[in-house]
Structures are given as structure tokens and as C-alpha cells.
Image 1 (cartoon, rainbow, N blue to C red):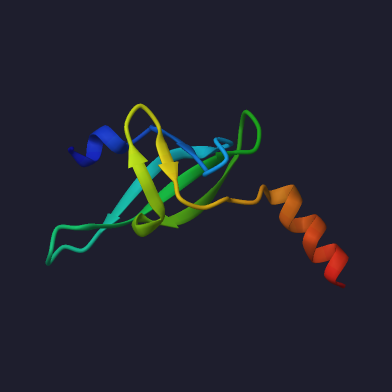
Image 2: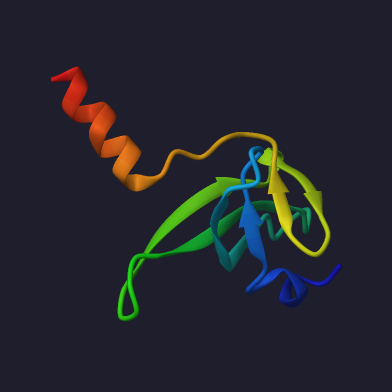
Length: 85
């Protein structure tokens, strides 16, 4: 699979919740292996957040990229941080 085929693919976590779309691909230039994916997380029409995922966390690549772990949503992370304080 070519890197450009990964760009724009929808990424789902292990519970099949949409995480975002692949915005960029990180790779090791010496080995040529993909090391991570940068995801665009849509906030609203005019802005987006960016998040990174290690390529080791990718379970399968097909029509969608499915991760082997759960990714908490930004509002869930904020709620957890507030509860801890």
C-alpha cells in the first residue's frame, strides 16, 4: 500500500467509534517503515485538532483503519481531568 492511499482514510478505534481521518504519515527514512499516523480530528467546519497515533496501534487497514485501542474523545478527557482535580 502506498502512503498516499492512507491519506484521508477514516480511522476507527477498537469500539468502531470514528476518531478522525489520516492527515499525515510518519516514517523512518532509514528503514522505510511507517512509525505513526497524524489524524485530523474535526472540531467544526472551520477548525480541526490534530492527534498522533503510533503505527503499532493499528490493527487492520482496509476501507477503514481500525486501531487496537480505544481513543477517548476530547470532551471525555476534559471531564476526566476535572474529576481528578
